Length: 122
Image 1: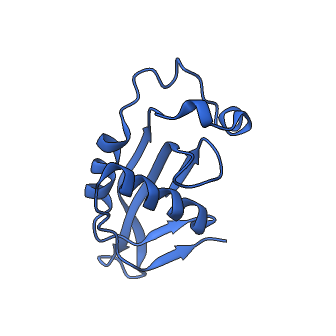
Image 2: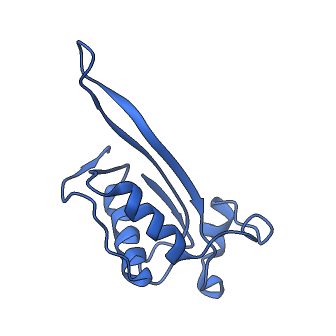
């Protein structure tokens, strides 16, 4: 999973984009390998754009036009919770992404159903 944000402070700054690949081991083959089950990518309409870091917006390619029809945080986190139920979070620089995910789930009032195990690709 990967998130792009409006800054570096979880709970203060927001997730602008979230994407992920859901995979599982394919046990039907001689040598187990990962099989992609689902993929998702969402833009999220920011609600606190006035406190966003300009550099973060620039790095992440934010424009009002690109995010004009983006869904709100609650809608996206509801879908993410459903798609990721029982999965293990794998991310590059996991602490950053996990902190923003936890803050987003809390803000949306949605319970994450991901497994407690995690893997940082760093």
